[in-house]
Length: 276
Image (tube, rainbow, N blue to C red; front, side):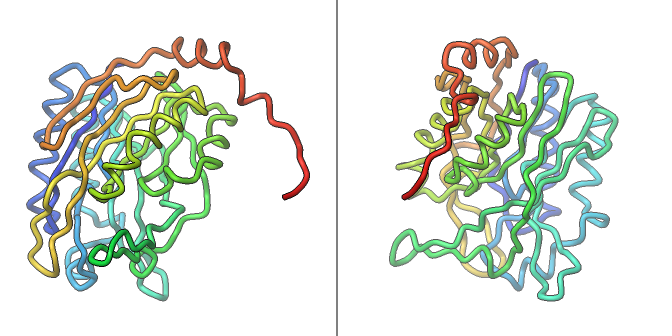
């Protein structure tokens, strides 16, 4: 199966982002990809809760989701919408950060709400409190496809190895990590963490990323690291997106997963222990 990682510089305006996203998905499909992946918050990158409240909708009403479902059906592809920022019915008004796997019939095959919230102070000038605006999910998600079992995760989840091990031990052969990574942590940690997850799990890791400076009509602009990455089950980087929006292609081979797990069957070697 040929996969394609879409790299975006999304703004805080979902209507403006949609045609750019659709054009890159079309390019990916024309390049032979049967599995196309977009980044985290494909519909809206914003640091402003006021802007998010003004432009976000529920899943049922989201125009990006409706259009991309139609595109998946028209192109006959599997499409991972890395995530959408969506309104929920939660009493506290917090949003969902939701990854959606769309089948070639346009139906939603799987939904995953980001479990781990990015609440960090990267530097004196760069602070994030994702949990202020987004409520965390509480369920790990697998989806079966004709090209393998897919485990869904999002961005900051990458730092929590137990989630990936659980997905791999439940049969995941492909792990998806759509992201909008900070430039500071991206430069230091993005590639090492992605390669570690691939090596530990003997799985493909596919990480489509937001990149660059994101236009903002309200609040301050956000910057993201880019460098969309595909890693094979032995830990080798097999595709990288650089810092510009675009498409990166990679061919997936289920036998590479089986081979890595035969050579180092660590997923079956867990041992009970006491302490600390």
